[in-house]
Length: 79
Figure 1 (cartoon, rainbow, N blue to C red):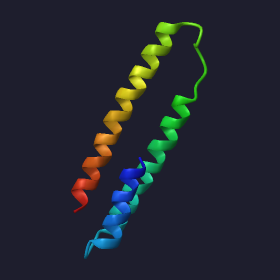
Figure 2 (figure 1 turned 135 degrees about the horizontal axis):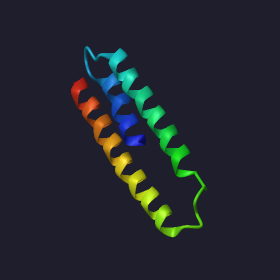
Figure 3 (figure 1 turned 30 degrees about the horizontal axis):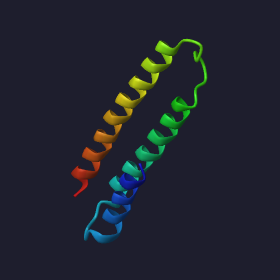
Figure 4 (figure 1 turned 45 degrees about the vertical axis):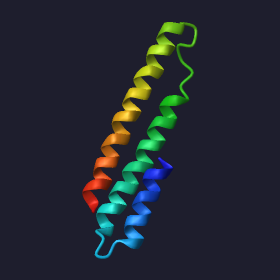
């Protein structure tokens, strides 16, 4: 997440005629996604069943990858 955020900041600072409003929207999306996944990662419910926990975190990782790729595409479309 930090690298995606840094990419947006570099875009805003170093690209001539950068669409700063669009970059700000991407930065907000990064912050919201990070907060969502931190919240999901800290759930302690269901630890008594190992298979359930494993499946939960497997889905969490897959969802995280999907979101990272989506944000990277948003950054790519900026410039």
